[in-house]
Length: 346
Ligand SMILES: NC(=O)c1ccc[n+]([C@@H]2O[C@H](COP(=O)([O-])OP(=O)(O)OC[C@H]3O[C@@H](n4cnc5c(N)ncnc54)[C@H](O)[C@@H]3O)[C@@H](O)[C@H]2O)c1
Figure 1 (cartoon, protein in one colour):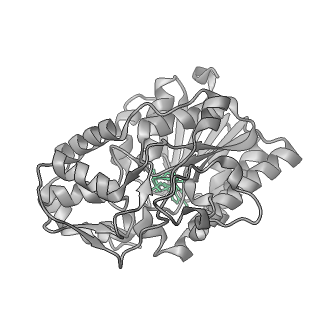
Figure 2 (cartoon, helix red, strand yellow):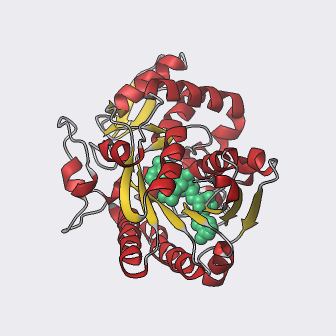
């Protein structure tokens, strides 16, 4: 795709992943409109991209259909990332709030189709997979895209909403010809990721020198943490190659337990203390790892950054950009809240 001739809308572009995606699109020469209500996204995330002169930011609530219609007008390509979302600590404890994604996704898809956009790419999630397949951390399970099928069994309200949007897009393609793709992100991490995601929470604990060092759950939970530059590359490739609503996993196949990740973080931060599991906290499924063969087959995508390298970069960013007193003020709230809620403004 020749991005230099494209007007591109990124909803939720002030978020962790959204802001990296905007930068990736600017690098490719696109002109970008960001629509974000700043409910969890922050303007500072876009600072660099705004300086390019090719990015406009509209602070707006896309749950209003008229606003959504204005956001998609004159756009060639849409990346829909706006969502009520946070890490596990947030989505487990805010199911009613996450249900608003059903409305938001429906509105965005409908308005994009009405406006005649050329391509619509949706930020979906590993939460669309059947949770019953993800209980046993000792099993080597790699989730292939075709496992999402009737009878569906998504993860919490957040996962069901992502699944409904994927299915809506397939229907829009079938019945109205909308060209579209869904990308299923698996536990993304990297610079600008907030503390309601496990890796950042653990880096934050090490930064605050917490002792004992608490991890949520038994620590046996397996994840495939996926670095943000790989997520961005896969998202852009999906827009370039997928037209029929096919959903593609964007995740590494590196199986890492929370305990292993905690040890890697403690070692890198020279913080040699006892790890203390807290099984009263939300954990999500105990074994969630993607199979990523389809992304390679259909779009030539595969992750390039190992967990070890991505962790080094993320720790460096965190330590360079945070202040201990500031982090300490609302650290516990930041594990389960998002943006304005964390700040007590919603
Ligand atoms: N971070 C992950 O590991 C992960 C995993 C799977 C899927 N995702 C999806 O990726 C996307 C980006 O997630 P993220 O982790 O970067 O940050 P995020 O979840 O904070 O991003 C959501 C963005 O949408 C904005 N937003 C929310 N409601 C809005 C509304 N009504 N109108 C306008 N803007 C609104 C927020 O301010 C924020 O900038 C989300 O759709 C999320 O569900 C993320």
